[in-house]
Length: 263
Image 1 (cartoon, one colour):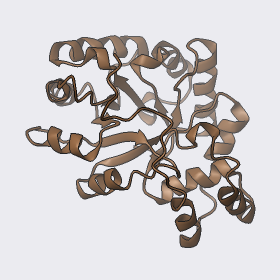
Image 2: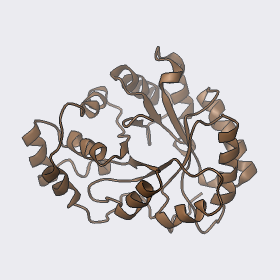
Image 3: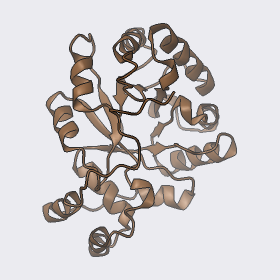
Image 4: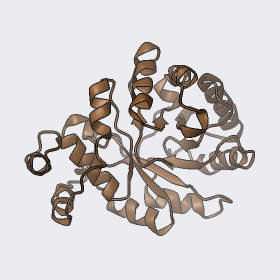
């Protein structure tokens, strides 16, 4: 799994997402993250079909939406996503939210295990699961989650979830790593960026990588897509890392997984 990729949340289907994915692949990205609820899987699939980059070099993630949780409905929803993407398999399939009140994520996971065993999905995981959701899922699963994609940025460092995932060899992945742009003028981050002659976004994304967190920033602008990826030629000091981590306020831009139940 690449440590860095392109997220396409809220990127319009059609030309916008096609061009964004192509720009990312041309820049060297090899990981694309979409979801059924983003309603742009077809555009992602079109870009994958039109690129010169071989399919086996591209890591494609999509996610099961909340309304489709349950064994049979999961299998049906996966078939629909695969058809829209125009692929024979996906590299990673995630349960988008735990929906604890609905109580179906274990049943849903059994369908994920079936897809994994059949080779139609190369890896299976979850999204927005807290440690106690993971513990419950792992009580009787045959295949443990390989990835947990959560909201993660300097204002929400998810320490408990991160430690649990490390302990159980589950890869943490960050969505909204730039906190939807809210952190780009933070004085601490700007100061560190100036010291390294990098942008605030590059510093935050580098902080992700040095925390061993996979990161998937979203952008539709080719120059920003290129800039976001230019983070492999410098390193943050431990002091820099600690200063950024100290910005944590357990502040979310997205919903709380313990209460979110929208379908």
